[in-house]
Image (cartoon, rainbow, N blue to C red; front, side, top):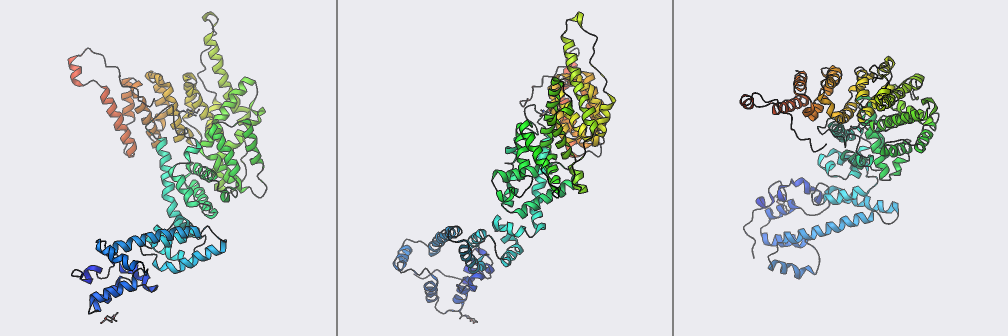
Length: 601
Ligand SMILES: *[C@@H]1O[C@H](CO)[C@@H](O)[C@H](O)[C@H]1NC(C)=O
Ligand SMILES: *[C@@H]1O[C@H](CO)[C@@H](O)[C@H](O)[C@H]1NC(C)=O
């Protein structure tokens, strides 16, 4: 039967091919000597007998299979359009071709298989912009360990092609284009830092889980680490580039989360057994061993020996490695583990009547803490030397911490004595001046001191907490006002929740500590609001109201502070009796808070 009234302009859409695609996409066919839509259009425009012309075009360009001679008219009888038939044949063939390409990439001698694929690429590349053929061309490139330079350039120059090509091909583009790679990596790094900060400022303050709860294995399942690992593949050059980005960003921002990412990336490649990279990163074994310690949240004797072996094994001429090791040790998860182990060791030493300087394990922990704390300076100065440990840290500061432990024991024993034998021992209320000074001047002492304070808070030792708290107002580099410490402190303070009902406790904690820094440090403002939002129901109404006023956002305050303060104000409103209640029952006392404990606790 005659085709319905037809109009080549309508059918083939002027300068566009089927489905409105630019004819340029099909230009590649012409290069290969295959007729395309343009040719058909011209034929139909010029011809005098369209039916004949169509028939001829079909014979010339259809599937040349004798058995189809009878099958095609049969399909016509069933009303199956030729387009549908051809499309399904095409799809089928493309599937086969894709399978074949992947198979070729694995079979035969190495040089031959790549030769075949290279030839295939040469022949098919002109069709790369044709959406239906593109997957095949991309598949060929994906399997080539080295796509010819010219093709890579063409792909790179075309945004759509670049987007469509496999990560294997992108890696080859990236490795010679640091800037382009940087553009791809930097949104991921931003996302990573943001995620970390969101956890630190999480409104969910819980004793059960906090920033340090996730295991190292769980952390490296995170989206960013997985994506970066995928982007790097087995490419040492790309790995080096990412490390260089991380060093640069750490240097520029002092943000320690970059150090965490450095370790997580290496361990993620370790999990995937990518030996191409692990064996060339001199930090691999050290990081692996430290990772096991972080998992256990403790450095045991055996691992301590091992770690020491790696540190002592850094050879002359390779001191640069110390820069990377120090970054690995500056990861807050590493510091957390080292500091927790240090506190545990100190307690053990009290029981054993031993001084810190006599414990090699403790000395090693300090050595690693100093190396980690010195990371920024080392990378900044490019002087790769282990920082010298101040002797006084070991001979004065740590024994002082041990004496605090003894103070607690003495006090506790005294409390248990029958009243007539009770000595007149009140809890020591003053702090040795040296302690305050150490926290101000010595970075390592400060870090350990802060962890000691977390430790006593966790033990709900209110006396010790209130005694040492004043030392936190001024610390080295404001470490006591860092997000990580405040995150842990707020978490542990929930264990002293009942004390919040006591005016003096609140005054010491808020007026004596938090409020001293709120106006100059926005992050402190946020943390104290988080804490109050969580524990407001424990605080006496009058105190809470005065705190709410004191914590009013300033003009400079960001959205986060304003939002938190609004929430606090709302809670306060809820606690106040409504005016109606007050007038109806004037004698009634202020209702005690009946706010249910949040489910997370
Ligand atoms: C179609 O006609 C145009 C102009 O008349 C001519 O240039 C062209 O060669 C013709 N094409 C074919 C395939 O005959
Ligand atoms: C309390 O502090 C300790 C450090 O001593 C830390 O390991 C723990 O995770 C903290 N707890 C909370 C709930 O933040």
